Amino acid sequence: MTTLLGYARVSKADGSQLHDLQRDALLNAGVAAEHIYEDSASGRRDNRSGLDACLKALRTGDALVVWKLDRLGRDLRHLVNLVDDLTKRNIGLKVLAGEGASIDTTTANGRLVFGIFAALAEFERALIVERTKAGLEAARARGRNGGRPFKMTPAKLRLAQASMGKPETKVGDLCIELGITRQTLYRFVGPKGELRDDGEKLLKNTKR
Image (tube, rainbow, N blue to C red; front, top):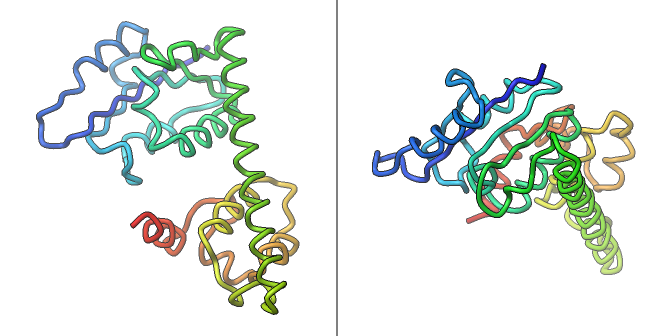
């Protein structure tokens, strides 16, 4: 039996915005009150404990329900990767209102839209690979073997995240492709592609 888990977010934590509208919509959609997770934070913030707890609680066959699509993702890239991750875990997504209201993976049309998101995520990863390889080739053409030795860059980090999450990835081959050592790789990324402290710092500094 499918369990519905709801997620609601408002942008301000000072109490000037309330979750009531979103919470009511989630309840009307069949989400139990104890299965609603909430955040009071900007959508661009990385540390959203409510969303993290919700994603952790979801199990195969469950469905994530949100009021609008913009309540879920920080930006398009984050949204595409999040939806792709849900697809791989066989978890559905229902969007109740707004531009993404056509997304409901319990229906054939909704699964089609969901598939488009997954294709976009794969396209994004391919672009990262292409940009990384182009950068390495440009560095070699200038007489530098892979640019600055053993340096992790945001593009390499994103590729490492995507690759480490795949069971078929060979760590040695990945390190050769990225031009880094195993020690450098594991400083930034865990065995399943999870960001470590150095990885989070690198991406956070890049956004400034």
